[in-house]
Image (cartoon, rainbow over all chains, first blue to last red; front, side):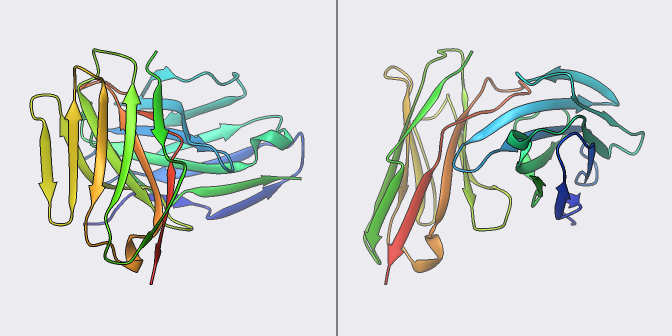
Length: 112
Length: 112
């Protein structure tokens, strides 16, 4: 069974640009979660999507947004990039609301 | 909200010795406690979890204990091997909730 996949692996942008990160959940999983892992810090919850709807978001500004598609894959968009947005962005998926979240390898976003 | 504290931040052990990582949580409603292992360049991998209806769970060389009264839980790794070197994260949430609150992580180094 394939795990959670994320693309791209690395992304380099300049300040003020927009970044789009993609995630494909494990087959059969309907919930997708996004986390930010800044260097030296733990995982901070960003967004939760379930059945195509944004169900909740963490303490991040509105320029962090996303969506979930009918096939349950998800996009994370970060607008007006700032230097401090540089981090590893992790996507996780789970079956329904169960807490067993399985993570992808992440997208390393670097903002110059 | 839930606040999870994790100690120590770094841990160096001799191969074959045991490693113990401790976490405390603040929300008495939390009843699901997973542990993740993150190797360099990879996403976190779920290694073991425990729910509040049990006090201890073991899987080969890994065990987790939970003290709900004191609101702390611990990860025990016995007979450590070089491949156990990684960053370990504890987390807590209410079962069937969407959000995991993570500790800051423990970098474990196993010396050969």
